[in-house]
Length: 99
Image 1 (spheres, rainbow, N blue to C red):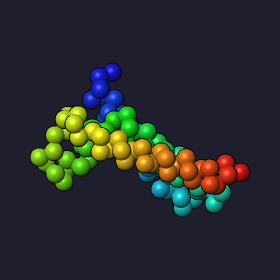
Image 2: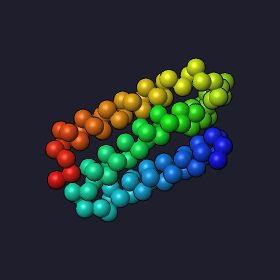
Image 3: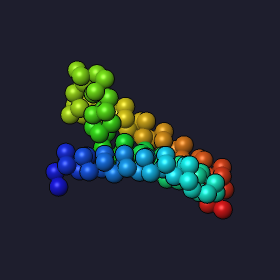
């Protein structure tokens, strides 16, 4: 699969995961909410690290002059993805596992 196709497939997978997590917040048992949020946030962090042009594609709708394929701007989404993953790891450690 070419990279642009991988970005599209992964983009839809992440969007679906976020929507499923959002709606499960209303129907899932309360003990599952925190782990679901951690998994969703971790998946978004990994997605941003692997495919920064996917996030830049979302940003491009508000800033049309942004070049998604310019790899010199990819460090910004990757930095945000790193923060997401560090945040998830710290929360998982603070929570004490999946009790």
